[in-house]
Length: 318
Image 1 (cartoon, rainbow, N blue to C red):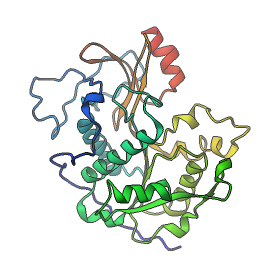
Image 2 (image 1 turned 90 degrees about the vertical axis):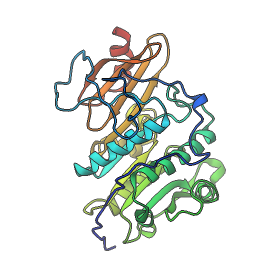
Image 3 (image 1 turned 180 degrees about the vertical axis):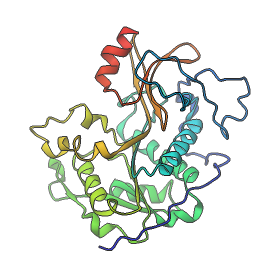
Image 4 (image 1 turned 90 degrees about the horizontal axis):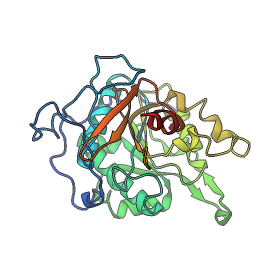
């Protein structure tokens, strides 16, 4: 397959308002924000304010100021868009965006699985509208886990758009036993494609293996970019899938994941010693503690900490 070398460009303006019916209701969201440098919050959506976070150790880069925890999904999507723009300028080729869709304080499983996926579809459309210039829709291919979800997206959120919608796997005759047929990526990708966005590839273990195939066959040695959106990659990082039973999936921690830049990330920890692990590229990884009306940074570092380290060491001792 001959790969083109597209000239990738991004939108320079932010969508002035979210599309009706596409954002999760703010009534479901527990809002949380860091204190601002000043009281002028009317310009927040166009020019993100920053504050330097108190630190318990591990990060000394004073040239990058910390982005505040988002107050709502409108601000979150703007932060994610700016993080991707900066990563693209730094020539990052494979990127991860991860955040909860059932509320900014929610954790995986708080919402029903199908509902969380539907909310991710809405967020992806909003994110694409912010990141991409309109003419780039035709060169953007969005991969959903399977063909049925492509049909749903076409009938709802992505109806009437020029985005190319595709899928990673298709059901086999043994679907009831958990078997799916992988789609050969070389047959799906077109020469004019510039950006791939993969939507929540976590329902079936084969989906991330297909993502790795997509990266190897259609991204490596090209100018194309790949974004994984809400892929719940922490399942792979944490060893949720036993290596003995899922050796190929476990191998991703040594092959694909080290090549990936996590450009935007939110993971909540519940309980008396709860908090948030937050990152907005190119800033550090921050561990935040929620108070009544703000978030306080209790630790930050350059490398991503494990969820176990955050829960048992950082939050528990703070």
